Amino acid sequence: MITNYSTCLAIILEHEGGFVNHPDDPGGITNHGVTKKVYDAWIDRESTPREMRDLTHEDVAPIYKKNYWNRAKCDQLPSGVDLSVFDWAVNSGVSRSAKALQRIVGVEQDGGIGPMTISAVNDFEPIDIIEKMHYARQSFYEKLSTFDTFGKGWTRRNDETKEKALEMMYG
Image (cartoon, rainbow, N blue to C red):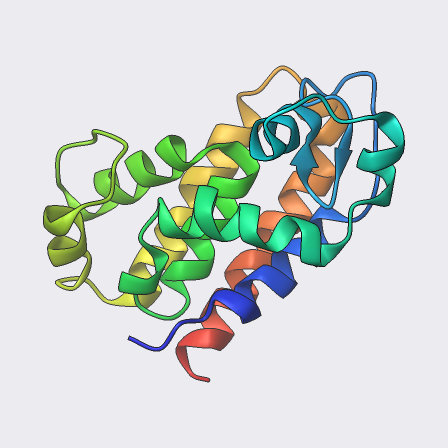
């Protein structure tokens, strides 16, 4: 399958924005969507606040590829479904995104996308998966205690992801 990684990454980086350190965000210091904890693990040492502020898209792209895109097997998913799974994986963890996908396609929800999940995905219309991922993600967000603080942005992101995913299907 032709990879949509670059296209999907551009969408995600637009959603993630730049440097933030919101007091209510459990991720803490974040730049281009990569938390300090994730970046420190990537570089195998403690980063400085300056390093976090100076991160570029080129610095974070390989992190997104290895930690999210590859782990969620997005190269094996249909166009549009790859974006839906990838964006939610970035925003809430690969396991949560994978379990939602697995619930939708009716396989064991173990949080790891493997051959059984991929096979089941191929038995569904991508548009149905995209629509159901959008609904499941919104339902998840609305149950979070921080929805009052971040809900408007999460909802916008979820809606935009669905819109872009549907465009990718026909693209």
